[in-house]
Image (tube, rainbow over all chains, first blue to last red):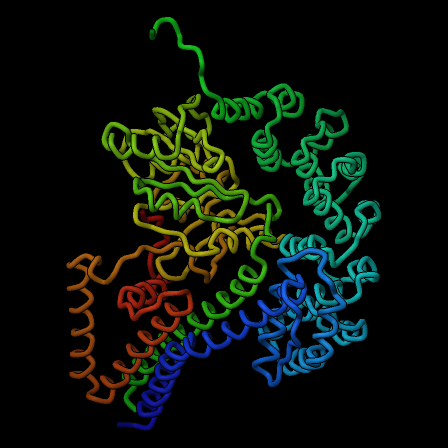
Length: 315
Length: 317
């Protein structure tokens, strides 16, 4: 047996062994159960304390495992509640030194682990100084780290939210915007939609449109129409058009028709189907689209209707 | 060292590296999905207005329909195609269970191959996402065409009988398809487990409907390969055709015998460790996407996905 064959056998055997060990140790049931029990205990204590169901007991976490479980418990509680008492959470964070613990853990981790820790940080009532330490993560090459760092920065420094988003040198994806909206829903980020819609920054405009859609702000119709008429970026204009249709506002306007005429046929067809499923009448469809396009829309509309009268010949 | 043995060892090394690379890609994708979908549950609504219609052929089991309807993403619907004349009882059972009513349906101009007898929608608000089509049973491709002609959303995910959806499959597909880099994607192919395809509806119409050579006709640049599981069947190795099992066994035995006769015991050991490595990688990736037990069926599919590079680009249902 020559040396290369032997070397190959050793390397492949080691790799196979490694995969087997990883497969068997991955779920590590007992450890997972222990962690989830600990987390469940902390969640119960936090809910009792925040809801003042029973006289609150001191929540303490010592060591890495307990602190991590407490940080995750806070994340779960904060992400499932609205208008939470941050003073009580701040007290727990300070007593257990969670801010320092998470900041250090973020520094010494990378990749998905770092992004998870940043997500936990976004729910912690930490000091504004902590957000400065996270700023360099916003420019990370890993998109997940980038987004979670942005969420943490926005949550820790809500007053600088517009400035932070405006200074981003990458385009926010729909997923990122959905997660920022989740922060807004939790009441952690007070942003008005009007300055966002009027801004010339792409990210701010997209966020503004998403806010209008998520919260069903009908009074933003004028601003949306303005974006559709004047916006040079086709993606933003299309997003505004879809949002206007989702809100159920009037679409048969001359300038909207003009904008639609500039869109590629495939995009027009997609929009036609969207408008149809949103429940617009055939008359509106005919005023916006060509005869062929509105013919497809008519069939789709009819497929949601039940025939109530029978033709005489079939009776 | 013998030149032929060197080539043999280099080939084995390439196979081992491909297995390791495939596993690492799956690991990375699944960890990202876990972080995005598990932590962001409920916050993904109408991502970039991407919608997905699941089109099903030969799905008649209520449990299966419930599983398909159990998706949190909002822009989603399930279209079931069944022949009411062949499966009278099952059809009536579905209609009664979901309180479905017959609605108007005109022949499609977009897909002339779609011949729909009747179209049903649920009168119950809970099952608004469900659409039932009564259509003459010819082939799965014709069933998919019929479903595509009434689909409301931009993307279509074809599903066969016994095929179930992985948890967060639709959300993760929507996350990917909503990204601005992938705006012009026409086909999304999953290379994990039993795989899966998500087609753009417009592409299907342009190519005249579903067929076995559909994937070959789609531009490769408009195709996106992902390493996330989309669908699976609750099958085991026993469900694989006996002829295929015999073929696999014969190939392995022939390979070992040829190696032993040509290069000796050392080469056989190298081949053996390579096969063990592939099995271990398959086992590990199966555990990653939620399979709890050792399954030779998953390893078989892992090996098939690895070899997909050599197989013709065909859409086989």
